[in-house]
Image: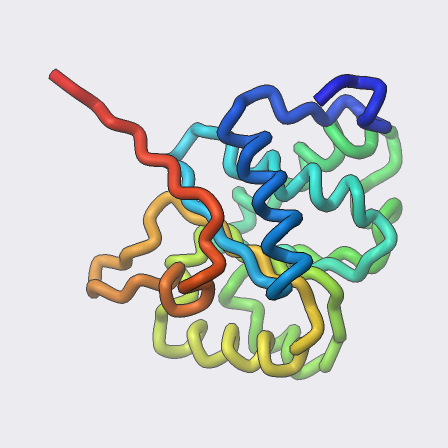
Amino acid sequence: WSSDVCSSDLELKWKHQQETYKKMLEQLSKTKRVGYIYPTSCGKSFPVLKYLEENQDKRVLFLAPSIEIIEQFKEYIQKYIMNNSSKSVKSQYKNWHFITYQSLKRFNTKNVKVDIIISDELHRTGGEVWGKEFDSLLENNPDAYKIGITATPRRTDGKDMMDKYFEKDIVYEFSKKIGR
């Protein structure tokens, strides 16, 4: 990716990010669903950020299990999409929502329609309460593009949430082999 192609500082520097982004676009054009798995600290946010950069006018819902992850993602948007603008992410993108999985019930009752649903740490959707709310969100937004990312698709209870929601739509699985 050259800086001539990008309108901001966002550049997918690593081959796995470039491959993921390319496959992500292809898969979304076919099924409107895509998932990918990267180990922690391998830049899993960047293909999503690139997608958002290309779709700034869309209504977006970003889901994560914690406020800390949401704030980090907003910092990335500020830096890489907004070029460190002094405007806040919230004022720049009024149709972008950032919520925790715990807040899904409240969000669902507002009946807000979105174009893109991004689920960070997708494995967290398998809980009894959050799972039902996540399913409701997907049912209420059938035309939305759905992107699921995680480092750990299989939960401690054995459920594989990536398989549940993105079974045939997983475009990249990056495994970090650590040898002795």
